[in-house]
Length: 425
Length: 165
Ligand SMILES: Cc1cc2nc3c(=O)[nH]c(=O)nc-3n(C[C@H](O)[C@H](O)[C@H](O)COP(=O)(O)O)c2cc1C
Ligand code: SF4
Ligand code: FES
Image 1 (cartoon, helix red, strand yellow):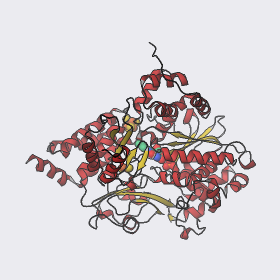
Image 2: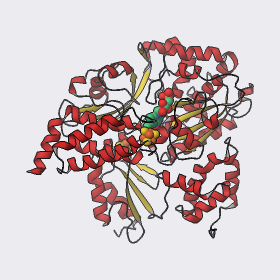
Image 3: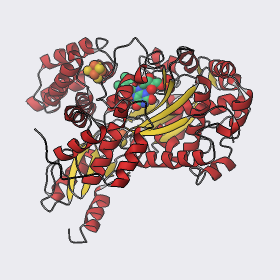
């Protein structure tokens, strides 16, 4: 049960996650799913919902942290075109694995969040774009959706109101870039996932050139609690401008890796020491990547940084999707960087030359460096390629590809040089 | 040039596709789901399978080919009975995925990307599977196996090989 006292809240998205058989509608309902939906459909109007979501301070959980209420307000009204709601369940950013748990353990929470969001936005057709590898999760969602249709929670005249909405699960097929919202739209239209130029933004011209809202799973799963307990309640959790709970996916060198939902503002150290059982070796981390592989690295000196969008920015990184990759003193940061350059080279969609050429180049040079066949000049090449890619492309994948390289060169130049010497000797 | 089609969707599949197509504002949106179905039915996406998908959705073969080659999960070649996909991205790498992968290829006597000569096992290396809390992660025919080690893989391989391996 979610507490109505913001100071007592232990979980929002994961509130029911450990309950057994929560995927079945009957059990989910007994545990509170869809309890508040009739009130929303009957007593709330679009303006009131928008208002609560704005007041809540909720920021998108997919990576960019854009205020959800503001994003929704960009959707033009009365265009005569349908408005689409797309749930981004692509979850491809290395280190991120939170949306999967919501979908496989509490699919009805996501469905309810999409119903309330769809109702607010005047949506008739909504889709969940889920990464192709999540076959089990897609099947769980399909089964939950089928039950919801049978109970008149989806389809025509939901719960006897004049609100009707269809919901479809759509599997991707293995392409990280499809997590970028315009690539996701291209993919959902049956094409290769190549990001579109913005503007126009999806809110104005998205799926089939119609107004479209793309939101992350965790974002949408937070909506039911915001409407039930109010925007002010949500805004009182966490810290100002960084409100609510947040799921952190912690992986790497910790004793208890996993997903932990904590109030925004909890410190990195608390999360790792108290929730994740500390480091596998030693007591200070060597590197912490706080928001997925595309975000700049933090060091031991940042261990006390609060987990908020603002504090992470101030520390020189980003909260991103909340995917925290921890490395202890045993980590080979050169090998890890080389592995990430391979990821970005493999996943670049290829339509911008700085990204297509740059990611390939970074990988080739990093292979040399890792194998001790590099030279001092390679460091300059890495730096130049990485700085020239960032900010000059259609989407942010190129910036993400530059982040590990720039972090490695900034924080571990001696280690890189030592590797060059070691193998040369 | 027309490709001889020797494969067909079953009538149940065609019905399923009819229902599917209606869920989208445009027919082309059904392309990825229908390719998944074809891959499930025929094992991989041969030219004939791609032509069949193109004909079924009224698309040009070129359009289908462009999509098949863009997405990693679509395979144009057959693979072993058991497709073992090892994640070696950050979280898995930090927890022994490279060593696990090396152990698997060595004990099966193949390189990454190859299939054993009896057609039983294909081993590939994949990007972050979105399950890093359970690193290292191996997908076996689309099913996630977490916190996998060499002993676990050896036991699996022995079991499905009928205990002879
Ligand atoms: C390369 C790239 C990959 C992305 N992958 C994802 C993803 O897997 N899931 C996600 O929710 N957002 C992802 N995003 C962010 C989306 O573009 C978009 O901002 C997000 O889905 C918006 O939802 P939100 O406002 O609820 O966060 C990605 C962005 C980029 C540039
Ligand atoms: S930056 Fe890279 S991934 Fe993004 S659109 Fe350009 S080429 Fe594609
Ligand atoms: S790094 Fe292997 S599942 Fe994420």
